[in-house]
Image 1 (cartoon, rainbow, N blue to C red):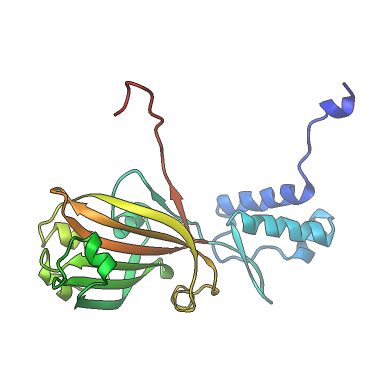
Image 2 (image 1 turned 135 degrees about the vertical axis):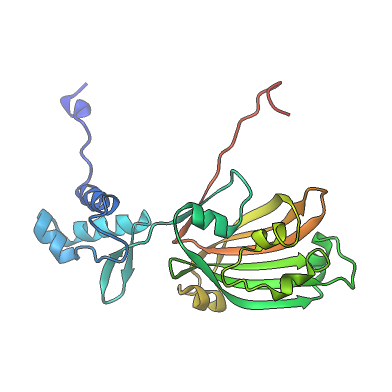
Length: 251
């Protein structure tokens, strides 16, 4: 075997530069919104070509650590909000658990007859109404998600009077309404932002969104809420754990 085959692999220069910048971000030396060195500054500091400098910045963007503004430069991206599939919790509970602040801009709050597909999912009669709640969710002052909920009106009729600017829907349902939410069934998929969604979330049209649709249930099996959640793909990440079942260990 040749000595070349035994030689340790040296990372490409652009990866080495990207890792150095990543360490500065993770240490807090560079914070969200701070400008990163320009291609020219990286060329001078590391004595590399412009292609190498550009590749280092592109690598950081692919990792979700940076974003580029045309004509202004490349900047440190905000940390992504994490959501885990370990337990059922509200958006507000998840954000507060991560030490961040959240509030909502209420786009709609009304009592309506739902579309047929949603009525079927909630097992409603044709004449039964729901409370429709549409909110733009902000975290640390920046738009992160669009939340649309359809809730059984007769299970909590006073929901129509709640100020959802700061109130948590689940906190109201489980507090004043006296309900107990125990499970949800949700479907996840990737979608492209429509013009309206892009405008509300402050992203380009067609940018990736994480879509979650599903139904939440009470302890007696009654469907309570049909929901649709749309999260910015550049500021949100989903984590989950899975157990492999072996014969005789799990149902």
